Amino acid sequence: MSSRGLWAIWILAGILTLGCSDEQGVPEPVNPGNNIGTGSIKLLQEEFNGEPVVVAGSERRNLVVAFSRLFEGEVRNFSPVQGRLPVIMEDEQGNNWDVFGRATFGPDAGAQLKYVNSGMGYWFVFGAFYPGLELQGQGPRAVSVNPDTTAEWSIPFSYVGQGTGFDGIPALDAPPFMVYNPLTIDPEDPFYLEDNDLVLVVSLNGETKIYPHKILDWHEIVNDDVGGVALSVTYCPLTGTGKVWKRNEEDLANGFGVSGLLYNSNLLAFDRITESFWHQLEGVSVFGDRMGERLELVPFVETTWGTWRGLAQDPLVMSEQTGIDRDYTEYPYGDYKTSDLIAYPVLYNDDRLSPKQRVFSIIVEGRAKVYQLSDF
Image (cartoon, rainbow, N blue to C red):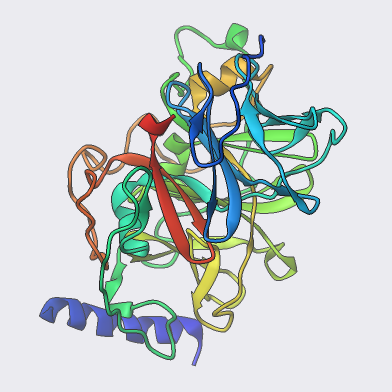
């Protein structure tokens, strides 16, 4: 039986189940595990689940990123760099590192730090996926959950909900981009982005592209190419989470689509070859012929349009002329962002923070830790 046929059977079972039940600041001494630095960029350095990590960000800039501190066999110590975005930190060897984890200056110029799976999102989704997860400043919580799994699914199917059908939300393939220049904007036809609008920024091999939430809210997946690398940029508006997947050989030509299914209210994508389903947060297939297969996660930055356009000359941003009739100045889910509503069943409700508080999470080998933006 095809994946789509099994999908239909499991949807019916799920419905029945649910029905029943510039100037560099002076570095401060580096103390791993302590918040260090003053000004707009702050750092946290620690070891999490066996991985030495550095988490750097600025609440004012609405920007947080995370990388491994393990570089060429040694653990590096970092200190914050102020007023020089996109450069955010330097190490004891004299290298400057930017928001994508690239060494922009120093003896290791051109090198890349290992990306740690990380990103922004609503608090509730991280609490649901990783019950009892560690919250910065509070530690983990003792939680006992007993999810049921089946041979066909690697996730508890009773927490899979149905929104639309396959491609009911249309993914975009190689959409048009435009070079933003405020001098060319017609004042009678204002640009569709405002300074506080959130965007995902991907930069590879000398090319940088900007993917606004305002478009991702309506399409959730963009199959694109950045710097010659085939990617799928994913965003789930119900959980506020973005991830960027590198497409492998099997998915190069066809990419991914929106299945209409959600696990813990979070996007499940499907690949267009085998129609297997893929878990957004970890880029792993949870159902179908490719179950257990993982995709490579690609570093990206989430920040505001105002922050990024202030850093980049002639930024390359998705055009609202996608060829699909949508009003990208409107948010498609009403007051969802500001309400406590969680649209679909979740495995665990963690009440330590408000459900829709926007937080930053790192995920290492199946464990997660969350930081509040106020930590930076």
